[in-house]
Length: 320
Image 1 (cartoon, one colour):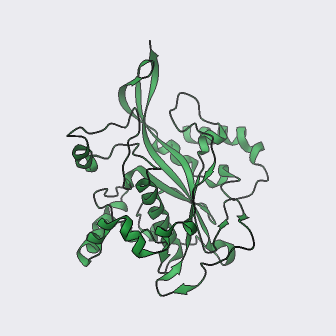
Image 2 (cartoon, one colour):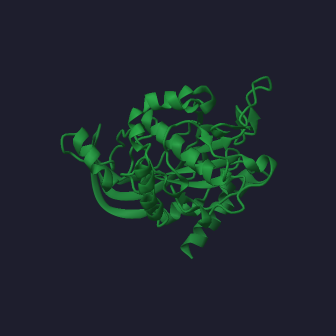
Image 3 (tube, helix red, strand yellow):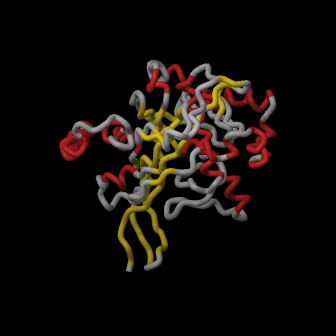
């Protein structure tokens, strides 16, 4: 009943702003973002105390889910379906043909802090209040995402996982991800979707829906490697990394985020926002559970994913 009331209140308040809007998530996030996921993930985690510039903040620790951006996986270069925009008709429109490495796709990350832009969250919830809309450099301009060899030079450690044993281990991540618990320690795996491997945006072309989810996961991994995304939530299975980097101290992210150069799979969920809107799923979730009837010929072969970030936060009172 509480969930129904919450949805009705939000619907009544913001329906006029979105009436008649396009179904692309950048233009109409109200109907293309899985808002019920925010309610489902909101959880009280205890008390907290954080030092600030002006003293100390004492309050309650919460686990909060927030939509932070969109990832497009498209066939044609420099095409942004989220905005229904092409960056010039004279640019080469590639990415629709098969090649020796499968199908070449293009991936775009659009920073879109929905809560901040829509201004619908009360101040006491410590979610992203930034209202800056930003488009990250597209994969078309990133040599690492267009050449496997350059990608390996950027992340040479991934050669360690390019063997049958490492690939077989990903079955364990597939089973765990399908129950909602991706294995962070297997950072080269994307559950049932495949392996993260190199950052190149090639796919086999066998299942475009699942492959779009895999490419979106690769983009999140790249953003962590470039320190554009940070660690915002608890990840006990990665504490050994924090201990090695900080002389045995496990960094708590309740008061402030920490840098982390690899994807933290338990920190992210994704919901497809285009061409078909679906519920948020954990990274690597078994495809049979969610991937059917998620595309159609033509414009329905480009995909947009909403990226949800799970974060710790401390809400309370400032002293003095």
